[in-house]
Amino acid sequence: MRSRIKIRDREELLTVVEGSFGIVRHVEFFRWLQDEVSAFLPHDVLVAVWGDFTSGHLNYDVASNIPEIRTQQVVSGCDVDPLMRDLHRRWLDGDENWFVLDRHKPAGADIPAQGCINALERMRSVLVHGIRDRRGGNDCLYAFFAKDTPIKPDPATLNILVPHIDSALRRVECLAPVEPEGVAPGAPPEMISEREQEIMDWVTSGKTNQEIGLILNISPNTVKNHLKRIFQKLNVTCRAQAVAKYALMIRA
Image 1 (cartoon, helix red, strand yellow):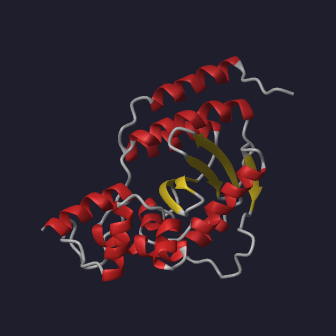
Image 2 (cartoon, one colour; image 1 turned 120 degrees about the vertical axis):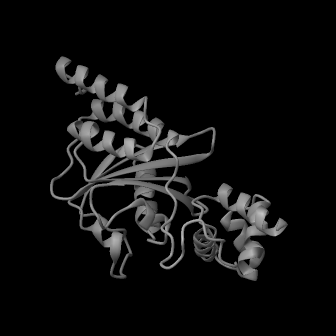
Protein backbone atom coordinates (compact mmCIF):
# COMPACT_ATOMS: atom_id res chain seq x y z
CA MET A 1 0.00 0.00 0.00
CA ARG A 2 1.35 3.39 -1.01
CA SER A 3 2.36 5.68 1.85
CA ARG A 4 0.55 9.00 2.19
CA ILE A 5 1.56 11.96 4.31
CA LYS A 6 -1.09 13.54 6.54
CA ILE A 7 -1.95 17.16 5.75
CA ARG A 8 -0.49 18.54 9.00
CA ASP A 9 2.68 16.47 8.59
CA ARG A 10 2.88 17.59 4.97
CA GLU A 11 2.87 21.26 6.03
CA GLU A 12 5.57 20.63 8.65
CA LEU A 13 7.61 18.68 6.12
CA LEU A 14 7.36 21.57 3.67
CA THR A 15 8.78 23.87 6.38
CA VAL A 16 11.70 21.47 6.85
CA VAL A 17 12.37 21.40 3.11
CA GLU A 18 12.25 25.20 2.90
CA GLY A 19 14.81 25.34 5.72
CA SER A 20 17.33 23.52 3.53
CA PHE A 21 17.46 26.24 0.88
CA GLY A 22 19.51 28.71 2.92
CA ILE A 23 22.17 26.24 4.12
CA VAL A 24 25.70 27.24 3.10
CA ARG A 25 27.82 26.25 6.13
CA HIS A 26 28.45 22.90 7.76
CA VAL A 27 27.17 24.09 11.14
CA GLU A 28 23.89 25.16 9.52
CA PHE A 29 23.57 21.75 7.88
CA PHE A 30 24.16 20.03 11.23
CA ARG A 31 21.59 22.18 13.06
CA TRP A 32 19.01 21.62 10.31
CA LEU A 33 19.47 17.85 10.57
CA GLN A 34 19.27 17.77 14.35
CA ASP A 35 16.53 20.36 14.90
CA GLU A 36 14.24 19.77 11.92
CA VAL A 37 15.02 16.64 9.92
CA SER A 38 15.25 14.48 13.06
CA ALA A 39 11.58 15.16 13.79
CA PHE A 40 10.74 13.09 10.71
CA LEU A 41 13.84 10.90 10.54
CA PRO A 42 15.26 10.30 14.06
CA HIS A 43 18.98 9.53 13.98
CA ASP A 44 22.23 10.28 15.81
CA VAL A 45 24.74 10.15 12.98
CA LEU A 46 24.59 10.79 9.24
CA VAL A 47 27.52 9.47 7.21
CA ALA A 48 27.51 10.69 3.62
CA VAL A 49 29.95 9.00 1.24
CA TRP A 50 30.37 9.71 -2.44
CA GLY A 51 32.83 8.86 -5.20
CA ASP A 52 33.92 5.84 -7.18
CA PHE A 53 33.09 2.76 -5.12
CA THR A 54 34.75 0.53 -7.74
CA SER A 55 38.17 2.18 -7.58
CA GLY A 56 37.87 2.80 -3.85
CA HIS A 57 38.39 6.57 -3.95
CA LEU A 58 35.68 7.87 -1.62
CA ASN A 59 34.91 11.18 0.06
CA TYR A 60 33.10 11.63 3.36
CA ASP A 61 31.07 14.08 5.34
CA VAL A 62 29.55 13.40 8.74
CA ALA A 63 26.92 15.08 10.89
CA SER A 64 27.00 13.57 14.35
CA ASN A 65 25.94 14.30 17.91
CA ILE A 66 28.22 11.53 19.22
CA PRO A 67 31.75 12.67 20.22
CA GLU A 68 33.48 9.51 18.93
CA ILE A 69 32.26 10.14 15.40
CA ARG A 70 33.21 13.31 13.56
CA THR A 71 33.98 14.20 9.94
CA GLN A 72 37.55 15.17 10.83
CA GLN A 73 38.15 11.73 12.35
CA VAL A 74 36.91 10.00 9.21
CA VAL A 75 38.91 12.09 6.71
CA SER A 76 41.97 11.97 8.94
CA GLY A 77 42.37 8.20 8.89
CA CYS A 78 39.42 6.41 10.52
CA ASP A 79 38.97 3.82 7.79
CA VAL A 80 35.21 3.40 7.37
CA ASP A 81 35.58 2.32 3.72
CA PRO A 82 34.84 -1.40 4.34
CA LEU A 83 31.67 -0.54 6.25
CA MET A 84 30.36 1.90 3.67
CA ARG A 85 31.36 -0.19 0.66
CA ASP A 86 29.46 -3.11 2.16
CA LEU A 87 26.37 -0.91 2.57
CA HIS A 88 26.79 0.29 -1.02
CA ARG A 89 26.94 -3.31 -2.27
CA ARG A 90 23.74 -4.12 -0.36
CA TRP A 91 22.09 -1.06 -1.90
CA LEU A 92 23.03 -2.21 -5.40
CA ASP A 93 21.90 -5.78 -4.66
CA GLY A 94 18.54 -4.38 -3.55
CA ASP A 95 17.97 -2.63 -6.91
CA GLU A 96 19.06 0.71 -5.41
CA ASN A 97 16.18 0.81 -2.93
CA TRP A 98 16.61 2.17 0.60
CA PHE A 99 16.80 -0.33 3.45
CA VAL A 100 17.27 -0.63 7.23
CA LEU A 101 19.69 -2.94 9.07
CA ASP A 102 20.12 -3.69 12.79
CA ARG A 103 23.58 -3.91 14.41
CA HIS A 104 25.39 -3.88 11.09
CA LYS A 105 28.92 -5.18 10.61
CA PRO A 106 30.43 -5.97 7.18
CA ALA A 107 30.73 -9.62 6.22
CA GLY A 108 34.28 -10.89 6.76
CA ALA A 109 35.19 -8.06 9.17
CA ASP A 110 37.00 -10.29 11.65
CA ILE A 111 39.43 -7.65 12.92
CA PRO A 112 38.17 -5.93 16.11
CA ALA A 113 36.94 -2.45 15.24
CA GLN A 114 38.31 0.58 17.05
CA GLY A 115 37.47 4.25 17.45
CA CYS A 116 34.71 5.65 15.26
CA ILE A 117 34.30 2.32 13.42
CA ASN A 118 33.48 0.58 16.68
CA ALA A 119 31.07 3.39 17.58
CA LEU A 120 29.23 3.02 14.25
CA GLU A 121 29.00 -0.75 14.56
CA ARG A 122 27.48 -0.37 18.05
CA MET A 123 24.57 1.62 16.64
CA ARG A 124 21.12 0.07 17.10
CA SER A 125 20.18 0.44 13.42
CA VAL A 126 21.20 2.06 10.14
CA LEU A 127 19.01 3.37 7.34
CA VAL A 128 20.72 3.48 3.94
CA HIS A 129 19.52 5.57 1.01
CA GLY A 130 21.50 6.09 -2.19
CA ILE A 131 21.42 8.55 -5.07
CA ARG A 132 22.83 7.69 -8.48
CA ASP A 133 24.78 10.55 -10.07
CA ARG A 134 24.50 9.61 -13.74
CA ARG A 135 26.18 12.80 -14.98
CA GLY A 136 29.20 12.56 -12.71
CA GLY A 137 29.35 8.77 -12.86
CA ASN A 138 29.52 8.48 -9.07
CA ASP A 139 27.11 7.26 -6.41
CA CYS A 140 26.27 9.05 -3.18
CA LEU A 141 25.25 6.97 -0.19
CA TYR A 142 23.55 8.33 2.93
CA ALA A 143 23.68 6.17 6.06
CA PHE A 144 21.59 7.32 9.03
CA PHE A 145 22.67 5.63 12.27
CA ALA A 146 20.50 5.50 15.40
CA LYS A 147 22.19 4.70 18.71
CA ASP A 148 19.37 3.28 20.83
CA THR A 149 16.19 2.89 18.78
CA PRO A 150 15.30 1.14 15.50
CA ILE A 151 14.74 3.44 12.52
CA LYS A 152 11.26 3.06 11.02
CA PRO A 153 10.93 5.70 8.28
CA ASP A 154 7.80 6.66 6.40
CA PRO A 155 8.67 5.87 2.75
CA ALA A 156 6.97 8.94 1.27
CA THR A 157 8.64 11.28 3.78
CA LEU A 158 12.02 9.66 3.25
CA ASN A 159 11.86 10.00 -0.54
CA ILE A 160 11.04 13.70 -0.17
CA LEU A 161 13.73 14.48 2.43
CA VAL A 162 16.78 12.69 1.04
CA PRO A 163 17.05 14.67 -2.24
CA HIS A 164 16.98 17.91 -0.22
CA ILE A 165 19.60 16.54 2.19
CA ASP A 166 21.72 15.69 -0.85
CA SER A 167 21.23 19.15 -2.37
CA ALA A 168 22.08 20.94 0.89
CA LEU A 169 25.22 18.90 1.49
CA ARG A 170 26.50 19.64 -2.02
CA ARG A 171 26.45 23.37 -1.15
CA VAL A 172 28.44 22.89 2.05
CA GLU A 173 32.24 23.06 1.99
CA CYS A 174 33.96 19.87 3.15
CA LEU A 175 35.62 20.02 6.56
CA ALA A 176 39.41 19.76 6.63
CA PRO A 177 41.28 16.91 8.33
CA VAL A 178 42.42 17.32 11.92
CA GLU A 179 45.89 18.85 12.09
CA PRO A 180 48.48 16.39 13.46
CA GLU A 181 49.38 17.07 17.08
CA GLY A 182 52.06 19.71 17.37
CA VAL A 183 51.44 21.14 13.87
CA ALA A 184 50.05 24.63 13.72
CA PRO A 185 47.14 25.30 11.33
CA GLY A 186 48.47 26.66 8.05
CA ALA A 187 51.93 25.17 8.53
CA PRO A 188 53.81 24.18 5.33
CA PRO A 189 52.92 20.65 4.14
CA GLU A 190 55.14 17.83 5.33
CA MET A 191 57.58 16.56 2.72
CA ILE A 192 56.01 13.78 0.69
CA SER A 193 58.05 10.71 -0.23
CA GLU A 194 59.26 9.74 -3.70
CA ARG A 195 56.54 7.06 -3.93
CA GLU A 196 53.90 9.60 -2.92
CA GLN A 197 55.22 12.03 -5.54
CA GLU A 198 55.01 9.26 -8.11
CA ILE A 199 51.40 8.58 -7.16
CA MET A 200 50.53 12.29 -7.25
CA ASP A 201 52.02 12.56 -10.74
CA TRP A 202 49.59 9.88 -11.93
CA VAL A 203 46.69 11.43 -9.98
CA THR A 204 47.44 14.71 -11.72
CA SER A 205 47.23 12.84 -15.03
CA GLY A 206 43.71 11.76 -14.12
CA LYS A 207 44.40 8.10 -13.32
CA THR A 208 42.15 6.17 -10.92
CA ASN A 209 43.44 4.18 -7.93
CA GLN A 210 43.03 0.97 -9.90
CA GLU A 211 44.95 2.32 -12.89
CA ILE A 212 47.75 3.66 -10.68
CA GLY A 213 47.95 0.28 -8.94
CA LEU A 214 48.39 -1.49 -12.29
CA ILE A 215 51.04 1.00 -13.41
CA LEU A 216 53.05 0.78 -10.17
CA ASN A 217 52.35 -2.94 -9.57
CA ILE A 218 50.66 -2.33 -6.22
CA SER A 219 47.07 -2.90 -5.04
CA PRO A 220 44.39 -0.19 -5.34
CA ASN A 221 44.05 -0.36 -1.55
CA THR A 222 47.76 0.48 -1.18
CA VAL A 223 47.26 3.44 -3.51
CA LYS A 224 44.30 4.56 -1.38
CA ASN A 225 46.37 4.36 1.81
CA HIS A 226 49.15 6.41 0.19
CA LEU A 227 46.59 9.02 -0.85
CA LYS A 228 45.19 9.25 2.68
CA ARG A 229 48.67 10.04 3.99
CA ILE A 230 49.21 12.54 1.16
CA PHE A 231 45.91 14.26 1.99
CA GLN A 232 46.98 14.54 5.63
CA LYS A 233 50.37 15.98 4.70
CA LEU A 234 48.88 18.48 2.26
CA ASN A 235 45.96 19.26 4.61
CA VAL A 236 43.35 18.63 1.92
CA THR A 237 40.19 16.52 1.75
CA CYS A 238 39.81 15.55 -1.89
CA ARG A 239 41.72 14.69 -5.05
CA ALA A 240 41.19 18.07 -6.73
CA GLN A 241 42.56 19.96 -3.72
CA ALA A 242 45.56 17.62 -3.57
CA VAL A 243 46.35 18.15 -7.26
CA ALA A 244 46.14 21.94 -6.89
CA LYS A 245 48.37 22.02 -3.78
CA TYR A 246 50.85 19.54 -5.26
CA ALA A 247 51.16 21.72 -8.36
CA LEU A 248 52.10 24.68 -6.16
CA MET A 249 54.68 22.57 -4.30
CA ILE A 250 56.53 21.42 -7.41
CA ARG A 251 56.62 24.95 -8.78
CA ALA A 252 58.16 26.34 -5.59
